[in-house]
Each structure stands twice: as structure tokens, then as C-alpha cells.
Image 1 (cartoon, rainbow, N blue to C red):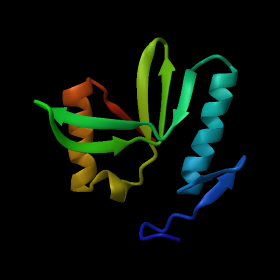
Image 2 (image 1 turned 30 degrees about the horizontal axis):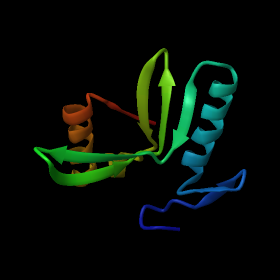
Image 3 (image 1 turned 90 degrees about the vertical axis):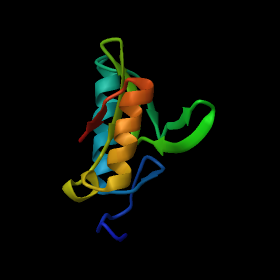
Image 4 (image 1 turned 180 degrees about the vertical axis):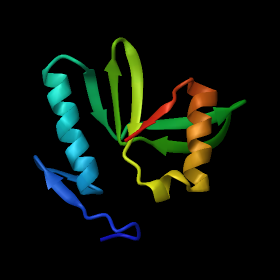
Length: 104
């Protein structure tokens, strides 16, 4: 168990940081199998650069395409949604990439 009381969970040979994240992965696999989403990926990293200066990085839980639109998704608890670092990275994703993080 980690500081947020998550329990690491293994599904299909993949270890997830929480049961909730593992369950969401299984749901997304079903959606991809049904053709509702495509290009499902885990832990894609986005690099924040402004005027060539590295500001930081953000690694999402999941990324995929839905109705032709890039979706970046993070499994978050109410506690982690409020963390300043996460809120800053969420704002940078919108400002730099034009992507709104979908929180589940």
C-alpha cells in the first residue's frame, strides 16, 4: 500500500498502481474491442517545453483515440485531484497541447 492507500494490482501481466486503474484498463480494452476507441496506450509521457526550455514532464495513465479525438486519461482520487503539482500539469497539458485531461 502506498501513501494514498492504493493497492498495486496485477492484470494480464501488467502491474497497476491501484485496483481502480486496473479496472479502468480492462474497461478500455473492452471499448477498444468493441471499436468505440482506438490506439489505446498506457503511460504515455508528454514533455513540457516553452521557448526550448524544459518545464517538466507528465505521464498519463491512458491515452487513446475516441471519435477521431486524442484523449488523455488519468485515474484520480479526490485527494490527488487537488495536488498542486497535478493541477499545474493539467493546466500545462491544456496550454501546450490543447488536451484536457479526462479524470476517472
